Image 1 (tube, rainbow, N blue to C red):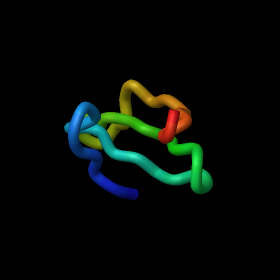
Image 2 (tube, helix red, strand yellow; image 1 turned 45 degrees about the vertical axis):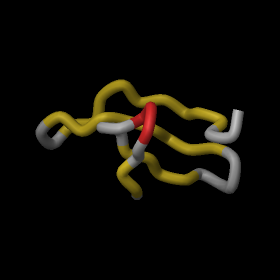
Image 3 (cartoon, one colour; image 1 turned 45 degrees about the horizontal axis):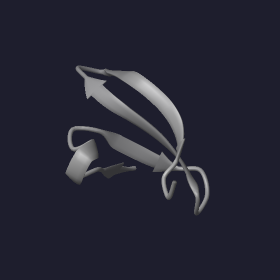
Image 4 (spheres, rainbow, N blue to C red; image 1 turned 60 degrees about the vertical axis):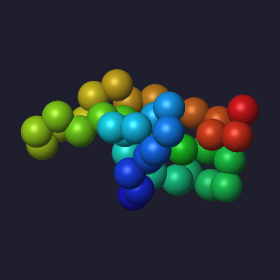
Length: 41
């Protein structure tokens, strides 16, 4: 898991593979705005 920067500041991500990530925002103990994204698109 890593903290993102730039236009995704405030989000975290977990890598699925080299191309795809699950991105989300932590609020308290819960994840919100969860999306699977092509990080290099």
